[in-house]
Amino acid sequence: MRESTRLPSSLATWVESVLGPLNCVRDASHARDNSQVWRVTGPAGDHYVKVAPKPILYTRETCAYRVAIPHLGHANAPVLRDSSAELLALILTAVDGEPLKEEEAPARRRVSHRQAGQLLRRFHDATTGPLVQPEATRVVENTVAGLDKHLAEAGDHLSSAEADTLRRLVSALPGCGPLPAGWRHGDFWERNLLWNGRRCALIDFERSEPGPLVTDFVKLATSLWPDHPELRTALFEGYGRPLSETEERALTAFAAADAASALAYGPRDGDPLVTARGRRTVECLMQEGRL
Image (tube, rainbow, N blue to C red; front, side, top):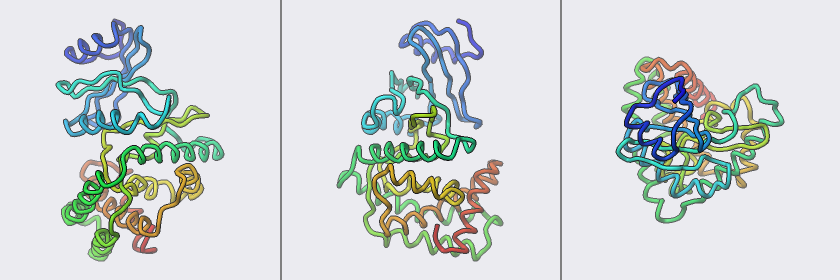
C-alpha cells in the first residue's frame, strides 16, 4: 500500500474489508486534536474514513445518515458505505467540491447559498411534528440552564453589563413558545458547504439531532451575515420561507447563548476566530438589542 500516512491497524483492517486494498491514504483531519479523518483511494474510488471523537457524535452522525441525509438527493451529501460502532468509524463517499471561501465570485457565492438553503430545508423537513417537539423543548431548557456556567467561564471577557444583557436575552427563550422543530444539522456554515463551482453539497453531520430549526442559522447570523446580508437573502430564497417574528427573537436569544459559549471556549482553547465571533456578537447585541 502506497501511502502518505497510515491508518491505525484495526481501522485499516476494517476499511480494507469494505473497500478492498488501499493505494493511498492521506490525512484530512481538521486542525484540532480530536479530529481523525483520512481520504483513502483504492479500486472502489475515493472515500473518507472518519473516527468520531465521542460515542454520542458517532451516534448522531450515523442516525443522520439513516433519517435525514437520504432526503438531500443524489450527490448533495456523502453516502455512508459502512460504519463500525466498535471503532466509532464511518466510511463515506467523497463528494466533489471544496469548502466555500470568501474569494468565490459574489454571484456564484449567492448561488451556492441559495442551493444551501434548499438542502437545509430538505434536511429540516426529514423529521418534523410532535415526535421532535419534546427535543426542541429540551434544547431550549438546556440553553437557558447552561448560560450561567458559560458566563462564569468567560470571566473578564464579559463586563457585568454585557453578561446581564446576555442573561436577559436568553431568558426570553421559553417565552417564545413552541418553535418549529425538526432534524437540524448542528454545524451549518460555509466550512461544511462544499462547492464545485456549480453545485453545493452538505457535509459533517456529527452534531445533527432533533431540535429548534432556527438554531441552524446562528453561526451564519453571527459570523457571515453582518457583512454579507445578500447571502442571508439568498439562503432564505432557497430555504423557501423567511423566519417568523418568533423565530427572529429566538435567533437573537440563541445567538446570545452562543456568544457566551464562544467567549468561554475561545480564550480557553486559544481559538481567536471563535473568540472574535463571540466578541462581535456581544457588541452587536449591546448596540442593537438584536441581530
